[in-house]
Amino acid sequence: MLDQGNNTELPAIPAKRYFTIGEVSDLCGVKPHVLRYWEQEFPALNPVKRRGNRRYYQRHDVLMIRQIRSLLYDEGFTITGARARLEGPQARMEASMSHQIVRQVRMELEEILGLLRR
Image 1 (cartoon, rainbow, N blue to C red):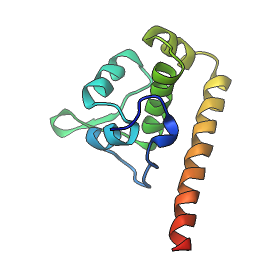
Image 2 (image 1 turned 90 degrees about the vertical axis):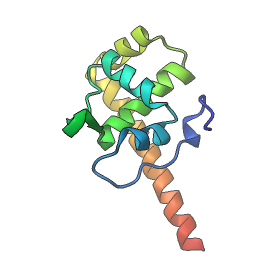
Image 3 (image 1 turned 180 degrees about the vertical axis):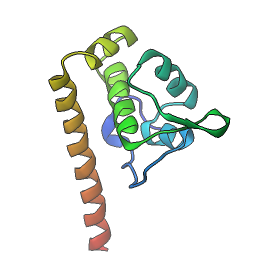
Image 4 (image 1 turned 90 degrees about the horizontal axis):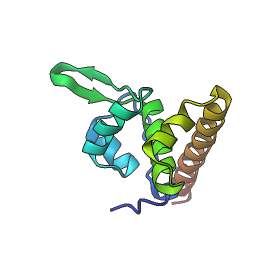
């Protein structure tokens, strides 16, 4: 099980268009029932729902979930505080998302470098 307090231990996000709730759970270190709860609490988190009400998350959803996870678990925000932070000025959210994208790209590049060195 992943340590809840450290985003750097989360796996790289695969290059896919859609992710199931189980895949997102593994990628973000959060149980599926928590993801469903967060959908109710964070309006911007709105995965595509298809047949049988199955959820399909996109890359931006996974990044947002990681951001929510970081706010709640690492920075100690309450749900209300995290929601306020995410719904704050657009520039702040974009800066945070950009930081996470850069971190993700770096992790993927380090993974590729490791494969090339073998």
